[in-house]
Image (cartoon, rainbow, N blue to C red; front, side, top):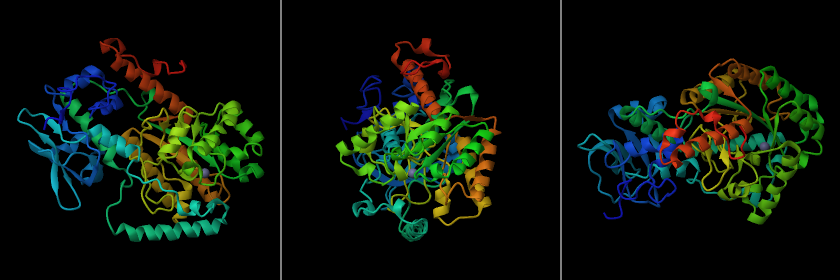
Length: 496
Ligand SMILES: [Zn+2]
């Protein structure tokens, strides 16, 4: 038992070491200061972690007992019936105390993962931070090259009806496969990341008057950001289509991000210049939409990413979305230091991605820094046009209802509504989808609780928030850092 870590009691309190930091990330996520962390976590505090660094994640069904569900705040409704998840834990550790949460593995083994001790303290028997990181960074996915890329097929060059047919066939296959076992992450809101965060916040609030640092400025409850992917030159050849979408954004008083494939920049120069001059943001959507980028060897990948330089020079571009959301850890390494934020991940996707018939997603509707990089992920969280279209759902009222449901869930959790449209002939520019989009924008624009911002502004805000929180941890006495609102801090580039 000698290598089991009882947090803090053994390793001290270095905030920069990750050797045994099993819960520090979550305290930083909320913005609790270092003093609160030390008062709450450890021998004397109400929270303890007893774990041995585990390298093998264990998949199972998490079940909370009794009033533990209420402690999950806005996540309680999703946590009530339990959730499938991976946990980083060592199954050989002998657990003690009254069980407050269980992990039930598919082979029928049940094991307490949170317990209460004699002193009425909570003990977590797994690596909470690394579990959150593991799921948030989609480490549960295998990143194999899609079969069609291996065969040199670019689906975007196929006729629209062939692509739609292919999507629908694969969706049916996925439904058949679903009978075989649980899918992860769970639609429409997965507790595997934020469930733990809210639970720990609930425990902190029981024992302390410390308050988290708000996620969003101006006292807003949640954030919303709009982006449009320009995959083909269609809307440059028929600028009235682009204008229709732009006009809806601007009528709602919103400026958005237009993620453009770099090889289309010359064809779209005039339109992009006008968008930029009108306060919109121009983002990088790869050099071409051929689905290869994420799977290229490092040198070839870096060469393509470097082409973002044209957009950076012309439009001050800081953001990226990978063509067809295809992403690998190597892609994030290549982006690091070139662009500041990414929008290639969904929180959860009910459909499928990458022709692999699987769910994907970071399980959180809040931004986060991709592990090992300075790239901020701003997930796409509201189900978008192509998604409904590819599933054959063409009833605009039903689509709008699903999008508004999604918006309400994001608001309740204080997250960010990442809304994406494709101004393409068979997608967002169809009259029924434009009507839907107008109504969706109306809901956001008229909601006084929403902070509506371009993704670049979200990126700058989240970095300032992090600088503020990091400062409160770095100082020997955190008192001087307290009480300053996050938006008064300066980011790493010194911008106010
Ligand atoms: Zn695209």
